[in-house]
Length: 141
Image (cartoon, rainbow, N blue to C red):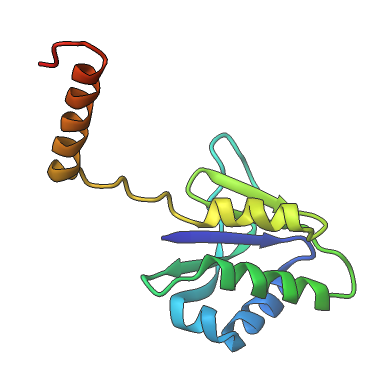
């Protein structure tokens, strides 16, 4: 999974965040972090900004990253706007409150895989429906 992080305040702030994440055990284990130039959005002309790009693996912990990001932000002398993008999902963090962290986790967590069908459970549910139908005076199947 690829995640892009932009921070107001320029390249120095991105380098600070990259250094912070390189010291965080959770980020080191689960993500490759590097400073790259962002691709312009569709229809955007001109300025290409730098972003921090995280390529995550199976050891990725979105909660650990969110905590590291929030903690880094608290160390900054000025509040910085942080924008995190995963695919077409984007969240901007302005204040660092709990609601923003929940929105961040919603963007970072990959959607849960659908539960595979369970033929035994399906047969059991069919039996229960048949029994309910007969108990109500219905004829069942």
